[in-house]
Image 1 (cartoon, rainbow, N blue to C red):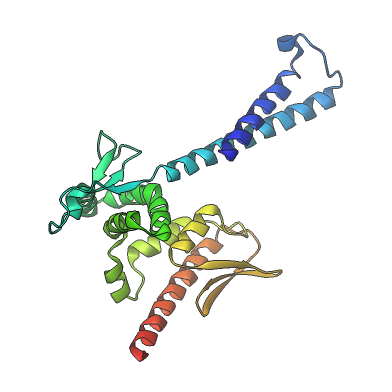
Image 2: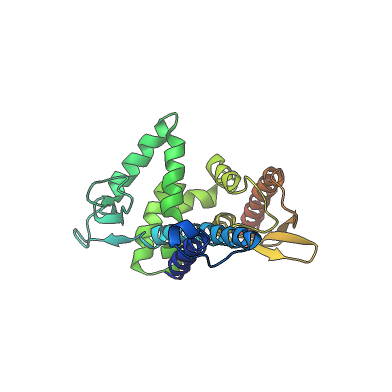
Length: 254
């Protein structure tokens, strides 16, 4: 909400600054110095572009907040009732025209995409739209967390299966790779969200940054570099694998 307000304000202010430098349009010759006119126009364009970017960020946040799940409460006690009575509010109308999709329908569609040659790109779009919001609901706990967890298990693989498989899957590596296409010296919002799914935190130091997962860490440069994204992806994937292997050994020891 705050991002939308400031975005709209900056966009309007930017348009106003550009317009007052056009005497033929406004009928006002407020600024006579040509260099001053150019400076004000540049500032106006910067404000306008900044406002548009903030409005885009606001829209992304709105999509996240629209992720909702619920149990309709029907058929309590029936076996495997979750498939018919767990629902995801489909804000993007990607699965149904009425704006909601059952767990069974969701699973059927994802399975269909996995069989298609180009289906993975659709799964990535779905994951980008819903996974972040679903993870937030799971983190909040309660009854809704069970429903959100069920949809995440379809989208990302069941939690039990992930706990048994300590390697990093191709889908997980692709998820990290897509986020780390470039490196700006500090994690972007998308990179922070992806790392958060694996429990990875970021520490910003005076000379270098560190992505940390348990006792393991990956050092990264504070200098922006498009090429660094590939190396960071590989290092983070290896760190996740080491952490899972170490966790497996600790469980066996206990």
